[in-house]
Image (cartoon, rainbow, N blue to C red):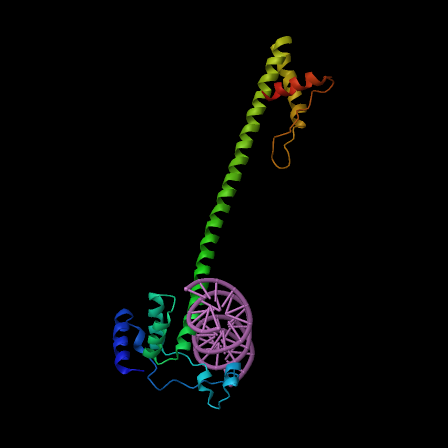
Length: 219
DNA sequence: TTGTGTTTTACGACCTCC
DNA sequence: GGAGGTCGTAAAACACAA
């Protein structure tokens, strides 16, 4: 690597990343790989004994930081910039290109992970909201049930009051009430639609009477 | 020290764009 | 058709618990 360029870059980076250069591997001290990778097809095709071109070697901190900075500027790599970077870092342009490819992949994964977390958190909020609304609906249905019951009670009282004395009417209503609401059913799904009010025992009604009765009970 | 999981480097296959 | 992109994966390098 060109020492002038390198020194310049290091000074520049050290301004941005004060902690970065505390333990840089000195030039020429790159450790040889512990294990050798199998020759790639490309290496085999090259057919040379010194396959150092194809050895995997970890980039130095300096190289990594320069590449990171360059990546921050622009994720895409034009060939001019690639050649310039490669020359500055003493790398093969192909290595720079590969590094950018891998870096883009990591960046994309990270972005996807962040998007996933955001979606998950908003989904969780929606679920909580749904539960809250459902319990509100249940509560409102309870209130509706009570109101209808109250209406029923009042309607019976009015009906009973028309023919009988107040005392006997009161007794009769209470009697009817137990048999009425003993059969009162709420749908399994909590829905009050299609609910039918049972008619009092020993009373016969034709279709129209029955309909009027049901309407009467409800309203 | 060693087994194992993770990260990094490198490549091939395939696709798109000019 | 070539350059450069993504995607999937191999293998080296590394971290770390047992």
